[in-house]
Image 1 (cartoon, rainbow, N blue to C red):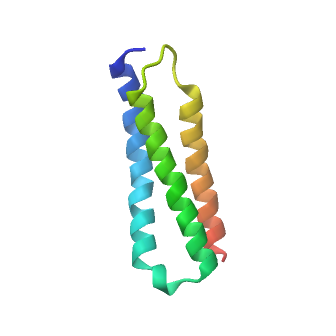
Image 2 (image 1 turned 120 degrees about the vertical axis):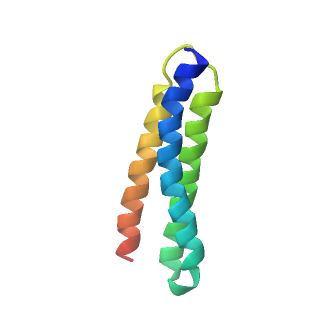
Length: 93
């Protein structure tokens, strides 16, 4: 797989991951003192999962491979879905 093809796959995933990471980190920073320990713990987990998604997305573009990196693409998708589920759980705390 060429570098251009890898980056065509990685750039939308990076953008989507950053679109989730920036508000998660800003929200954690802005409202940290106003919430309880359970809310804070879930916020930290959300930030870590989304940061891992950003890292996996960048690795798709950086690491040369012969085939489409379906495992990493799937892990990014699962991480984004897990983040959504954790956000729903965090709002019920």
